[in-house]
Image (cartoon, rainbow, N blue to C red; front, top):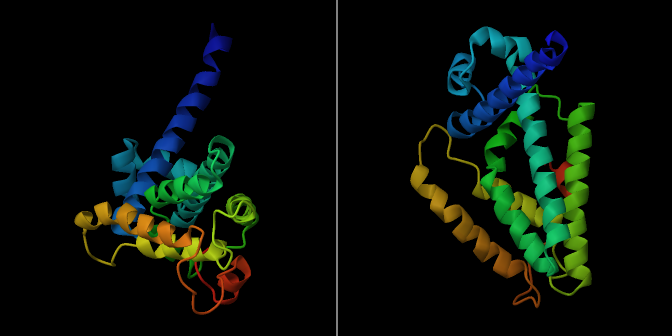
Length: 213
């Protein structure tokens, strides 16, 4: 009997960790990265000691949240590619699901003293970029996505559309995110209706300009 009960604390600890990460992601989006950790613990339904047992400091929690969001968005891209017969429908589905993650609200957490080149984070970012690049390449090869755009064009737009105004509570703006994203997607679909100024925003270009990625 004791052997059967042994895994239970591990499962409970895993559930607590998941609750903390979920609560942190929600509160980082709502209030920013400086939200008190005890408030995160309260929303997660755990004690402060439990939070600190999993995440000894704010940096460790921020890291886990950012990696978890990247993993979720990567899974969205992979599922869209696998399940959508229309290659542009896959791009569109991914874009709306990524917007629901409010990735723009997480961008400020990648600046400052946060190590965006930490191996686990870099690996998660690499998988995400590869999955989204695959969506774009397939849609362009099929003639469904205009040829003069790159992955960065969508990622920059997602970042801007989902980044809340600092220090303001603006819940009424949320319904417009998917509306405005759909307008953008209409502009990405081939055949192109206009000539775009400038050059395509590649992932390399985003890195050179230090854009959140």
